[in-house]
Length: 87
Image: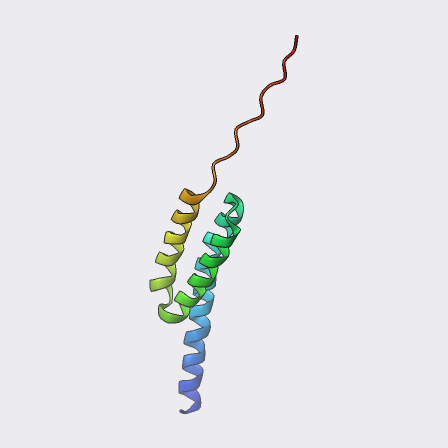
């Protein structure tokens, strides 16, 4: 392998990792906001690996799927406390 080919593949891998990380930040922050940190971190890792494999073609759909799962799997908000009796 010559230097040009090595540099090309390093650029492809670095670009895929950056794209995957940027796509993975969406489910990560949505998961933190919805109280699903574990799913958010899993989404970030899956998107990073997807970005390495196929770039944005695989990382973006993975990000969308994880975000939808996080939104619909988020726990319901607890009911508000009852009002005190004022007699």
